[in-house]
Image (cartoon, rainbow, N blue to C red):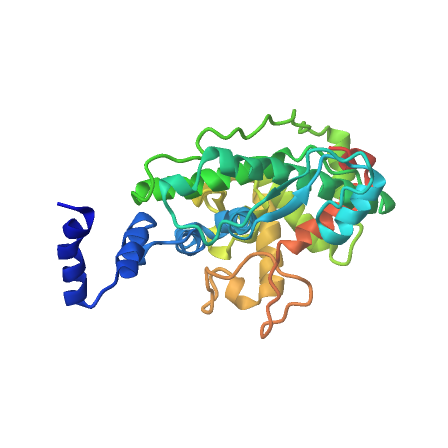
Length: 339
């Protein structure tokens, strides 16, 4: 039987179905790339982000965006000319004559989610490029910080690299769990090596100087003192302080409960002096709804308010206040500017 005779029945079936050879080829190609139900990386990331907490999504969003849209070329050179170009364009022009090994990351948002479309070799450079961009960003920002009298930021880019790899691992593990791929291509990508921490305990004299600085400067020293006292005695993070409500204060048990990192609710023992200070401030600024024992008492309002708060327009504490406070401390105390 000749090849022509062998294909005659197939051609006859296609004609009977009203199809062409091109239709058949397109159908086969569609099946190879996932078919009409194929999911692109951009679509999958949009869906995957819904399962993340607000803080985690915020941390990963930049790196998800890089995976979808790509990232412009970044070199390893940190000369003045390269930093000037980077500060204007967030990319490298490589016109200084010393640039080497500039890398860019291609956009992957339109790629269909499948094992062969994402390999370690392809996605690994993103961590390196992100690290380079972070180094340049820190060096550009340090010029501004130096003019303001602030200590320089680290310029190793390690934090950005680590967060990038963590975001990719999270994403591809979800793909494995959804049975879209068999193995995460990000599992073996190195997060790099963390630098030695500069954290240390502060001395009694430093603590006294810190509290004096907090309580004698700024436009709302009472609020700043309340924040700092709560941070120090409760060992609370910024988020924990922001989420403290009047109902979280237990004077009888000498406890203040904190919502902390990882959505953990932690009762923390503290002094009656701190409790009374916070309760008094909350009642004076948050009105009778913050006063325990009053008929209109509500356990849900926050403890910390700005001085311009009124019963009709409560102005609750925001995270920005911590930035303002910590910057003021760093400008006043040299040792605080170096740790």
